[in-house]
Image 1 (cartoon, one colour):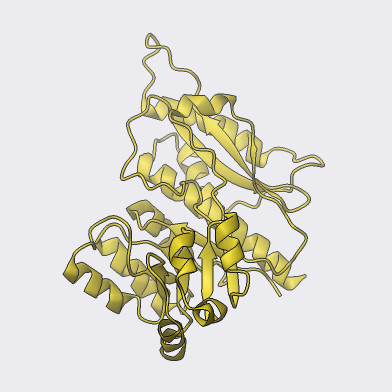
Image 2 (image 1 turned 90 degrees about the horizontal axis):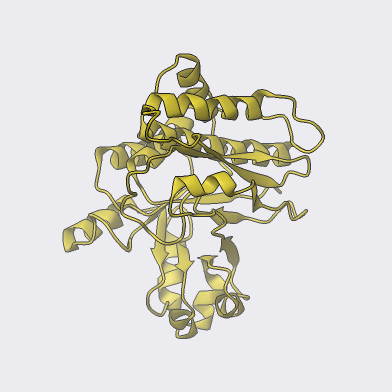
Length: 310
């Protein structure tokens, strides 16, 4: 049985656009099940949810986000309706067996409980734990309390988040996910975000891209590409920086792979970047974000499809 991947998306515009475009193009396996924490009440959010429904692509929508536009009485009531059949809930208080069984009986899929703290789990009904499906932080106390759960998905936070893009010049490629050898292990991560939510980033002198690839053992790696140092006297434009960064990116992904790295298929997201580079234009910061998310999702999607067919 092929594993499932539960990417955790904060519902930002370009993250949702990445998801929307992949699903619309049919480039995302249904083994990739996005978990969306909606922080912005936007047209893009509603369009993405409608498309996922229309394409019968599985997803979860968190009905009690920790931040954002829905944190009002009316907003939470609206989310409760939107999440019907795809409900996920951050565990902030004890869970009762009645809650779990009622949701399991009436929803299209069982509610996905997100466990980030041991305290409410300790107070929960044992039967609720046994019957529940959980996405959990891999922390010892939480895992001990959830060892009898019906389903447990570990939520990892592997991305190396540094305060400035220039620092990534010194960062080697990092292991993003190790192939455990178990073909049935479901997993989750925050893509190129972190577990800590940031409302927005800050302007940076340097451009960066964080792109995933596979080695020959199907371990997922993340490589950091950064525009070259920009002394003030050179006065490089964003376009100049992008083209210099993409020269390295194109060389890495399209050159001979050797014995360590698998040949990298040209994903829809990577093609967006390569097209902009070949046309010698800077596509904008939002497109860089969207393309990198698309590339990562499609890379994992193809990995899972290969496992499913093997």
